[in-house]
Image (cartoon, rainbow, N blue to C red; front, side):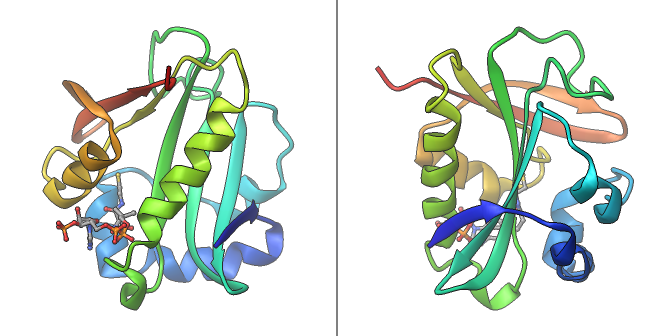
Length: 161
Ligand SMILES: CC(C)(COP(=O)(O)OP(=O)(O)OC[C@H]1O[C@@H](n2cnc3c(N)ncnc32)[C@H](O)[C@@H]1OP(=O)(O)O)[C@@H](O)C(=O)NCCC(=O)NCCS
């Protein structure tokens, strides 16, 4: 598996993934992502990665600096963090260990920046499978928090010592 930056040519695939029931179930009431806009803007607080297995795209990871992200989704949050969204597109690729490797690779990316002290993630509180997945990777539960209309469970993983 490798992670590569997502590009405009990925937009159609990402829109198709967004229509998958398992992605809709994990996304809550957030507005649909405008991928054409998302993939063409040039900002230094967001990174979009496509995960590929043998050259085949299977998932997407979005990384933001939650303090600097433009909508201030995370509100008043400390500096030097990253926040992640992750999902696998094709349903046949769920539960095969790919998500675990994606998380390992993206945590390496985040902590390669020596100023980064921790990484946040905010699954829906009801997404018990994703929560178990993050806990197994080493995230710890921080708090329940409402983002817009969504009841989420905030998790954090600190820089490995
Ligand atoms: C969460 C996700 C990235 C994990 O990747 P994965 O490759 O499926 O997971 P792995 O095979 O490495 O690990 C297996 C674990 O993943 C989780 N998982 C598996 N299928 C899942 C699914 N359909 N939805 C949520 N979590 C799932 C479970 O915790 C599973 O462990 P379990 O079998 O003991 O329940 C992936 O399942 C996914 O994209 N799910 C749907 C979207 C989602 O929930 N994203 C997270 C939003 S915060």
